[in-house]
Length: 166
Image 1 (cartoon, one colour):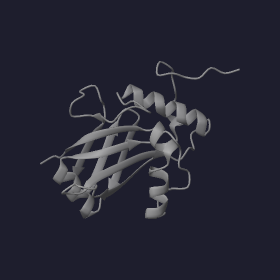
Image 2: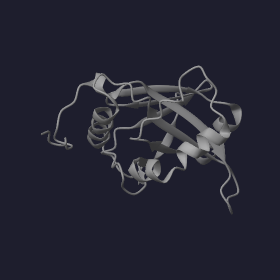
Image 3: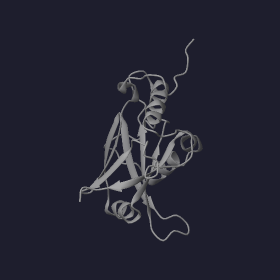
Image 4: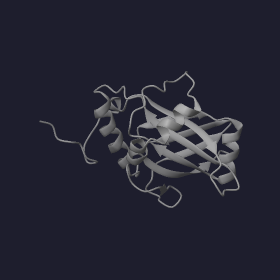
């Protein structure tokens, strides 16, 4: 019999598996400009399998001040959130404890991120093994995963201020 891990539990970074960052931008109804989104997810290929990886990711998110399954948090208003987004030279770099990921952002994403001064970050605890690096993800596949009720409900959601070196 095993006991579920909690935020006070421990994990090995190798249990997290491959962490991926993907972005898109879109205009919400009634908005006057686009919103930039970033989705961080795991391939579920951690050393002890996808379920252990899911629990490890929940612990890592909580340690970074993010609440999986909770309300949208605003990193600009919550100094305890250890998630930083740097946008520079066409790249978005997300840095958190146990995670550093880079996204080569298209011009429309960069315009939305810089125009809003923030990005909507979603940190999925549900693995997405089909979306592997180097292979394109169609809008339909991205929408199906990012809007999946279980994925949304179990993810951490955070508004990340855009920082730059300039």
